[in-house]
Length: 77
Image (cartoon, rainbow, N blue to C red; front, side, top):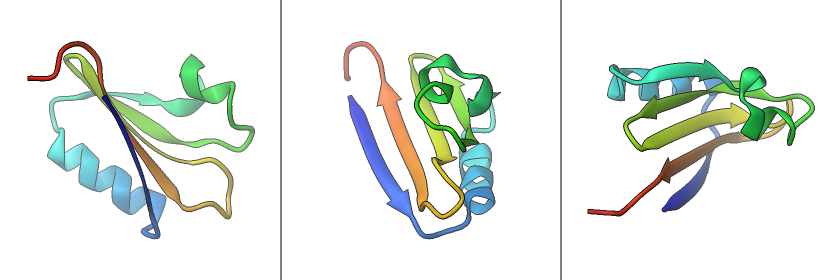
């Protein structure tokens, strides 16, 4: 399952909301994530991973809206 959304909120605001909501998740800088860093030149954001799911919160460029990708791998319960 893959859900995508955009927000007019600042990147830091959305990142902090997800950090609090997923406080036990591991965090990766998307500039160090092979799935994202190859796709965007001016990428800025984070990936929060828990179990078989992750949330990526990022800006693809300075003027872009904040993007949110929610991905769940494996069977949906």
